[in-house]
Length: 209
Image (cartoon, rainbow, N blue to C red; front, top):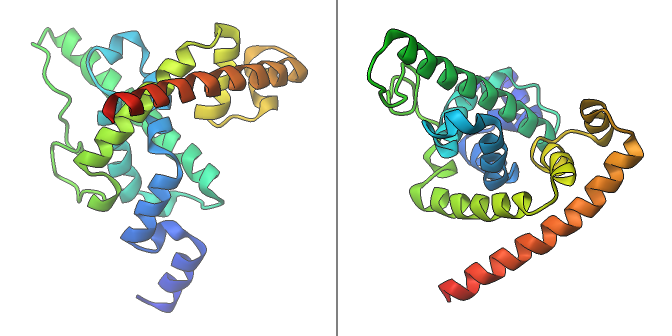
């Protein structure tokens, strides 16, 4: 590694190697990323592709393009990953739309550059393993259930704040409400969400013990 490469790696942990990458992927909260992706898929696309498939492709593309991420902090990295996920979702939507237009029998989502295609170097194996994905999937399931249990007006704010990473001012602007209303909905919704999530996790733990 050259001196310039070393300096870049020190200023950007995304360039510091596979162990740093795996640590940063865990830091963004993979289970909450699955919930965020699930919320972005929409009802039709959910029938054709799973959130974890989009997450896997997101990590693949992000690893390949990690030098393009302007590092600030973990929160900024998470926002960048969500942007990568949005592109993967758009690709999936275009893929199935093209199949429908062509009248072709629906095929799995395998395109050049996808995880299954294998035409690119896979992202480091330490950041995603079958056992780790299973745990993340279960956690995301409980998070999603807890989110759905919150009244819809609070749920919108929680989705945007907890899973999409928007600030309260941005949420207020997007929903067309005042910042004080957004804060109130967030506080009340977060309390309900936390209580429901703890209850679901406790029940799951008791069932598995």
